[in-house]
Length: 300
Image (tube, rainbow, N blue to C red; front, side, top):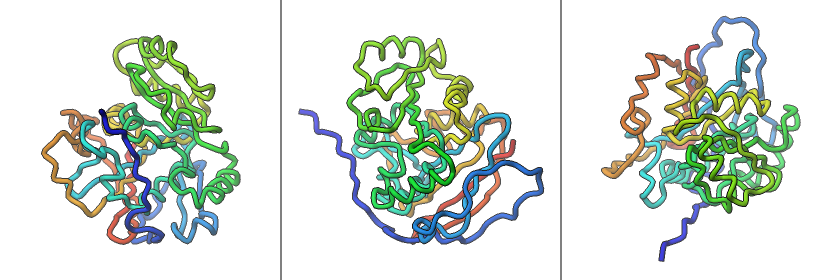
């Protein structure tokens, strides 16, 4: 009998620690832009001192990415390994979960690949799921920012092969868009999807192109999209030059796996260097215990 997949929700290490600011780059000289964020509300500011502002692009939605990596660059284990998600890479860091919750709170949509969906069968892509004790504080902050109560989850799948009982597809009050191919949409049409899920075709071949995915994000009315992986989806967005910022947590462990893994520099045999030589600049560094929280901005 196949063992059931159980998502670990233990608080883990670094629980309750503040994300202490260590360094921040000077603001570059630029024309005025719309921004989202600022100082966090008092209930959250004890964990995240200072400001967090996201520049809003005028030409398209701003795309953020968030990953946790081991010291040797592993961001996800192979799909057949026990515990293949980011929680295992972070060592179940509660501070990393808090950082993820903050970014979800600022986002209009959270974009995940089908593999990421399968890795966390009980996961819901909201701030409240990561930090239930602070759910009211995150909800209040979204209200102050004039955002919808919950970000929309966008699941990217070429095949449409999804478990329709997944918690992330059935959470009350959380809208879901499945971005898929025509063949994937035909497959999904035969499944009993929840009423909060709608399917949109984003490509007629065997894959979902990054540009078509961006149009679905735009069609959802999003100004800020947060990509939480997996690494293959991130690589597609990066190669299309659509990633504006990367929030990267460095966890103090060496994964040291010989099995199939995904690393920041290698996604299914394709180097991120194929992103046409695009450079990024370090914007800030924070620390919570032994975890480092790095923020990078990509050049246009």
